[in-house]
Amino acid sequence: MFDDRSPIYLQIADKIKEDILSGALGEDEQVMSTNQYASFYRINPATAAKGFQQLVEEGVLYKRRGIGMFVSPDAREKLRGQRRERFFEEVVDAMITEARVIGISLDEIVRRIEGAK
Image (cartoon, rainbow, N blue to C red; front, side, top):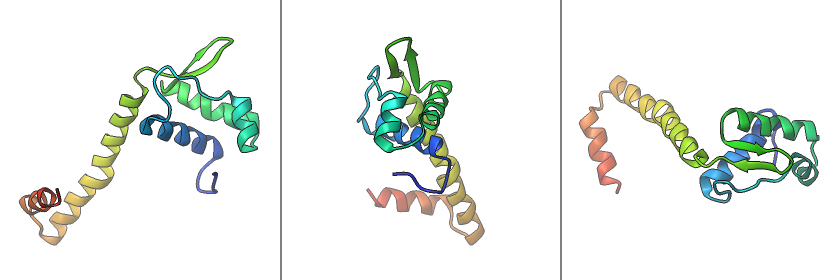
């Protein structure tokens, strides 16, 4: 599951985010404990805890003392909003910049997109 592209704790956080976005984890649903996660993926529990803590800080997960970690009620919408914003910044804005450089009008781009439906 893990690769060398980024720290494992970030990959853990990304995996949980993907599970929330896909609907595999729903709002207020309990996630595996850090120890369960560490055991399942054979990683250090501190690494798993660091990934979970990042998600708590981002408001994606919340902790119920003595019970565990749960998906925040607004996590899916929050993540979708972040993903949309990143899509526009990384894909659409870059596409518009490149189109201007090579002489493609925004009207041409819109026609092409509308024709792809």
